[in-house]
Structure formats: C-alpha cells, structure tokens
Length: 432
Image: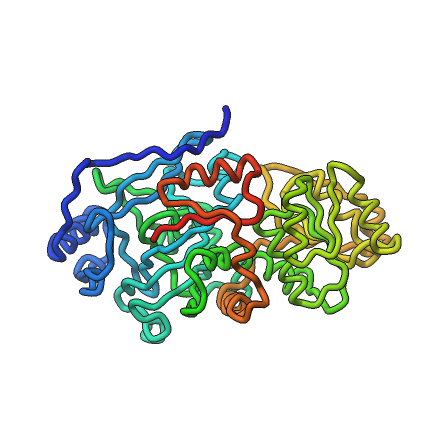
C-alpha cells in the first residue's frame, strides 16, 4: 500500500467554547477517576498558570495520531494531559520530523497504536506533577523554556544509576514496548470518549505533552524554539554516536553514510570534535552540496561511484578511523564496515525495518580488529545540556541544519516529504 500521511481532522465538535478553570479541573478530575489514576492526581487541581497559555479548545488540545500503517495521520482532540510525580507538562512549541516516526507510520517498526507520534520537542513548562522533587521545580519553573530528549531516562534503573541513560530499562520496557510512561499508563486520552492513546516518547506532535523531567534541559532565550527542536533527537543522537560510540579524537578521519537529519548532524559534531577528513556519502546531490556547508571536506555520490573505493582513495588506501551508518539499510551497513581502516570503528545509528540483517566479512572482522558498535542516542542528563551549549555557542549551526518548516496542520505533508526524500537536512513542525 502506498504511504500517504495526509493529515485528516477528527473533531468532536465544530464549535468549541473556551472552558473556565473550574471546567478544566472538572474534566481532569473526571478522567482521573475513569482511568484509575492515583488519589494524589485526582485531587490536584491545575495550576493557575495554565490560564495564561492558549489552547485551541480551552481544556483540550490537538494531537497528530497514527492509527494504522500507511494511513493518513489524523488531528484529534485530547484532554490536556496531566503529569505525575517528577514529570512535567510542556506547552509544545515545535516538534522535529524524524525517520523513526516514519518507520512506525509505515509499519516497519512495531509500536502500540493508536499513538501520538513526535519525539523531538521544545516548549514551555506549564505544570509539575504532584509530589515532584523540589529540585526539579527549581530547575524547570513554570514558564521556563525547555528542550526534550527522545530518550527519557527513569534515573533509577541499573543502567541509569551508572550514567548509561541511553540504555534505560524503563524507557525500553514501557515506552518503546508498550507506548506508556513508567507507571505503565499513557497520559493521553481522547476528548470524545476518554479512550487512551499511546505515546511515542512523549507524544510530542501535540499542543501539550508530558515527559519525565530527566529527559529535559533548559533552553536559553538566545536559541529559537523551532530550530532547537532538533537538539532532542537529530543532534542528540549524533552527539551520542560521536562522543560515546565513535569516541572521535582530533585528527580522526570519518565517513558518514546517509546525510539526513542525523547524518548531517554527525558532520557538524565531527567537525566540533576536531575530525580531519570528514566524508559525506549519499545518493542525492542536493544533500551532498548541503553537507559541504555543515563540515564535510569531501562528498561521495554512491549512485555514481563505488563509495568504499572512493573513501579509500581519499584516505590514501587506508580507510577511515570511523564510519557512521545513518540510513538503516543492509547495503549501507556493509559499506560502513568496509570503509574503516584496520582497527577502525563502524558505528551503526540508522534504524531499519524490523528483522533486517546486515552482513560482515567475519575473517576481516577478526583479523583486522574491526569494531562494530550500535548507538541509539545520547545520555540525556549528561549530553543534552552539552548539546544545548554547542548550539548556544554557535559551534553547532542550528539554522543551517533545519531546511524545512511546517505548520501543525501540515504535519502529514511533512512526513510525506520526508518519505519522498524532499527534506534535505531536517524538517520541523511549528506548534506555536
């Protein structure tokens, strides 16, 4: 079936009257009783600060919903979600357009449905969950600007306790496996019948979203909401790959295969880390030309020449110290492993269709000490503030990295453009 993510509007009412704060509280309280929320949640009233935030439908919001593979996204109306302990309610300002969402929408990666997609956000803090740690409230006061990472660490599991937020047990066991937060429940409920809708990460393609506070970092006033949304996935993923998997050192040579949002971010991060030869590989000339402005010292069009041979030619026959695969295809997996020098690292960050298998020459792997390393993302508590600093200082050029902007109503068009290769670097949906 052809992929057709054209947005449809699903509305319970054509005419929506703004609710008073009392009515908002009533809708929250009623829903909590229906869904078995904790007593603390049902007794807590929305903060008065909510009245200062505009929502298109008073006590309700809109979100972009995925229901079935290769079917249009739908704009549907929800109760404004409420945070629980150590969680934060965000008024979403922008959400990035990522291939991970696209994989879900095409049915290539299994995920609970219906769900609100989107996992790369900026916004403003509206509310803290009941009994939230006072240090979280001090760091993210109501009204503060924040950016959210797609990996939302629980902070207490065996991996998080060792600083490995990218392997958080609860994130994978609950969010990626069940589409919920870490009490096993979603925060999203439809307006018309209170039925639950799952969350891909925080479910960021919506006017409001809830995320664990451990997945947030402050966003300085100097950084724009729209472009900064990519910090939470594209740049965050690239930073994790460069800093922890590749361990890029000044003077290292690197090849990046697949110059989309994450791959193009890898170019900028590699340059920031002092890499020497930075080789961009893709099959689209427009993406390769853009790569030159992002730090690439050489470009290779794999549709016109043998990418592995060209990489070896550029590096004097040796291959690169690090090759990064940012596309998620068996062919590029093999190109990545063949492009590294003896003792080099092949870093895999591109997600693929479920069940895809990459091949590697076992004897070369063993004899030449080739390292094949997977990298899913960064470590939110450590890395997200560092990524923000790179952007704040101008070392990472955000405006140059975002090439397409869309209105919220055009989210379906954004993913259609992504699927057709029309977004050169990264696209962002503005939810202002």
